[in-house]
Image 1 (cartoon, rainbow, N blue to C red):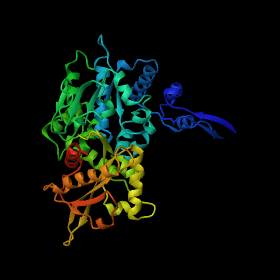
Image 2 (cartoon, one colour; image 1 turned 180 degrees about the vertical axis):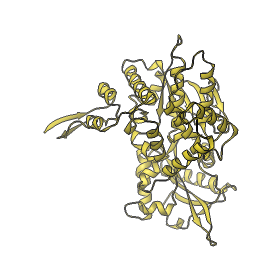
Image 3 (cartoon, rainbow, N blue to C red; image 1 turned 30 degrees about the horizontal axis):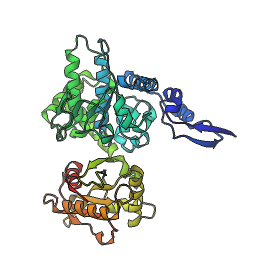
Image 4 (cartoon, rainbow, N blue to C red; image 1 turned 135 degrees about the vertical axis):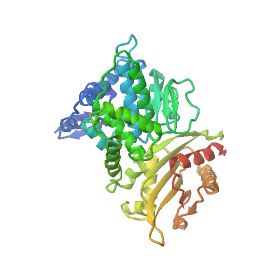
Length: 457
């Protein structure tokens, strides 16, 4: 038996860059097997093709420059913390473009895509795994830089880097707000952040990847000589647009135009645009829905988006608010817990929100059920929980829960009804049902945030 040490990224950069794998926090352990990081290296399959090679080497160079105190040379392109295919592809596309479009200039840009999700959460989105595998990326996502692989806390790294580019999100997360916003691309509502960013593109399209790819193509075609655009990246772009637009069935004119431009450059150029996008959408949607093997904790964290929200309260100037989106009913989720009972759902939820330090959590559930006539109807649920052990005391938690509850129940467009087991819920817990089909996070989050921003206690 030998004693081995497991290190952080900062402590073993040489191992990190050789393996491109995540490592555990520092701790002394007794082990009879080789170091887990080295073992992981042997089991991973290295990707093939220019895009995988570039992504892996780019990650390596970023970590080398960080170790040599050259973080100021880098731009970090980041999407939202949900890490869906659109957000991931947008970030990867723009980082690749920034790096290659300036490589022959007097001021080459160093840019890297950051996925703001932990490595072990990436496979909670099977559609991402399928799309990356089709693009010949390395197994275990070792080509990609994820949040848990950052060698420095974002709050301090934000001040060191050249700046950030935000894609598929209207504002930077609080931990990145000390970084200059260089560019923005989003298909959501403009929140006014990054007014000096260039380009700054807010436009209603099905996929943010459409906006990023359009800007990339326009700039690429204006270069004296085009750089190499790997087919693997082109196919990843088409996949992101396909899944967000339902194979172009729910696309805007811009989604269709950009998809056509990308297709003509890809290895699928001989295919019919609508046939190819429809096939991609079908396969990716099937993968996306393959979630029955996931437990409740993974369902809560697979599409978690949260940040600090400012309040007028002098006692509690910020509150941590997080949202999860789950394609199962509350009853189905309860059955996924160890004991299959209501209390266990809230125990699992509490353990997860304690880990991420959330004061308020909102789970947005959606599912289909048959009505009295046997027709399927879309039903949505809103689950609200408020904690007392992070930033707020019990009286404040009661007040905040009441404030947010009233805001949800007062919204006439939702017309919520209390869940059939609402009387069994505990303190600062509530579940509502409603039938507004489009009321996902984009609708519910502003309602809850506005209530928190007005709360003063």
